[in-house]
Structures are given as C-alpha cells and as structure tokens.
Length: 140
Image 1 (cartoon, rainbow, N blue to C red):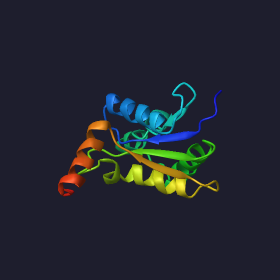
Image 2: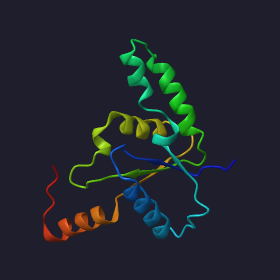
Image 3: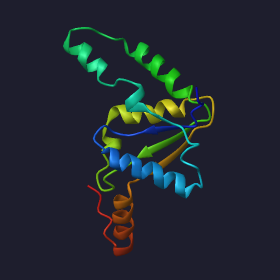
Image 4: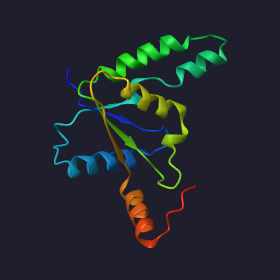
C-alpha cells in the first residue's frame, strides 16, 4: 500500500487526456518523478453518484454521515496537497459544482496544513496567458 501525497480533484466533465496533461505538467513544473508521485483522485475513490441514486430510490443518507466519511477519506491522504484542475479558464466547471467546493472546504478543515495548487490543461494555460497579454481578460 502506497502513501498518497496529493489529492487530485476534478469535475467529472474533464477528459482523461486533460487530466494526464495536468498531472504531467504538475510533475514537470515541480521536478517530480511521475513514477514516484501517487495521486488520490476523488471521482475514482468516492462514488459521488451514489447519493443521487439512493435519493431516486427514496432512500436517505444524513449529511453528517456523508460528511464524516468524506472527511476521513480526504484528510487521511497524509500531507495534504490538493491539486485542483480548472478548465476552461473562462468558465471553470470546477467552481460551479458544490461537490468540488465541498472538497476544498473539507481539505481546509484538516488539522494538517493543506496546500492547494490550481492547474489547467496546457491549451487552457496558453489561452489564459494569451488573454492576459492581449488584454482579453473577460471571464464568463
């Protein structure tokens, strides 16, 4: 069993190619060997759709139960470092989802310090920088 050093959080609408791009860029930027970096990817470790499925069946999960389980999973990662993927830069899906904001909030409640890094896929980073340099900083 490996110790996870980073939590990678993403909205479920991003492509696997974008996720890989972000993780590769993150490792390169921080001089990390991708073979030595172990990521905990929320959407693969916590079934976010189970609550909705249960709700459709008329079943109920108290928020406190969900919050407690989620808190344990997020904060047991170890030295918390949350890597949040933002795309598109003009209208990031991540900040429009309550679940993603709840992840950030939960990580901030950890007794250990939690570092948060915002990353974008390469094409979004380029569009963001182009927008800054060209004065086109309109965000939808």
